[in-house]
Length: 369
Ligand code: GDP
Ligand code: MG
Image (cartoon, rainbow, N blue to C red; front, side):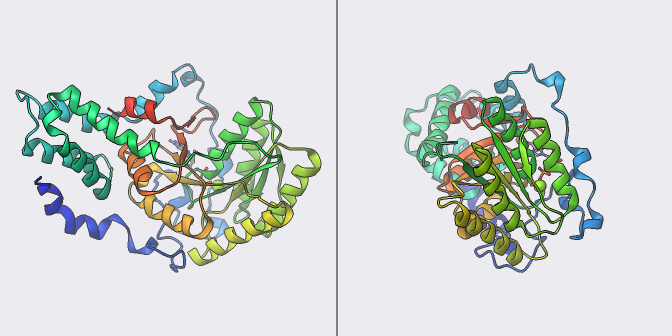
């Protein structure tokens, strides 16, 4: 098969797909390099000190009441509308007046998959598989079904996620670079677990800025969760230790440990998070039971390099992919699931407390294509 588009673009894409700043090891001495280019957060504030941080707690949004009635599927579908229009409309166009899959169509489809953020490697794999079965694909409906099957096969190959709250307390350490949505995701998860009748405790171990502690405190209060907090710039590992201590004595079911996403260098950040991880295990063997990595879908392929970096240092057990409601392209979900052997547990589709969904491959594929 031709794969011409890929060949033409390969040199260009190779140099941009995985930014060298976050390639390979976590010891890259750049704190800003891996921060995602999110326009709406403190991630782009350009400095590291407490003074330049906007008061995050003011940004913690109330659940958007008007959207509460909208079905989860509709929320996901509207979030993925951009990708849908790249994939579905164009796939329909590809088949106008044709009954068989020819090389031109495969090439055009390949370009659509890359544009939808599926990544070069994943796109090539999918295209090879589609090309192999092309003689049995007789129209646009069948092409979409074949694509759905190929995408689903990636999700099915992933390991099972760690189940929530099997042990008590069940400790979830939440990590990720600055601004990806760690604190917001904890807030949503805390509310969800509380509603299920579980006793939740949050450890405010992002002590880098006072505003970060206030932000998680607002979410904890709203969720009816306990919080363990120290002063800003306190040792995050000490907060984590006290959090587990309190959870054991109070009989909490679930503990969420919020962590910082930015320190002065990446080396410092990884060292700090590793120390938190070790300290959790000192107080409670087997803790943390889950290391949940939060990735921002709008950062595209950069999310993949972040995942590799955190996984190498900490051993990630699950991923939460946020901001699928925004400018993100849904193909990144496929790219992440095909490139990493880590289950995608949750997707974030908005800033409100209801805007977190347990990732369901079938629903996702139906919303995508
Ligand atoms: P952290 O630095 O990783 O803790 O990130 P925050 O939780 O503070 O979130 C950064 C910004 O992203 C905040 O403005 C959040 O409201 C926003 N955010 C988080 N998750 C989502 C999501 O799923 N969709 C959208 N649109 N915004 C989100
Ligand atoms: Mg935070």
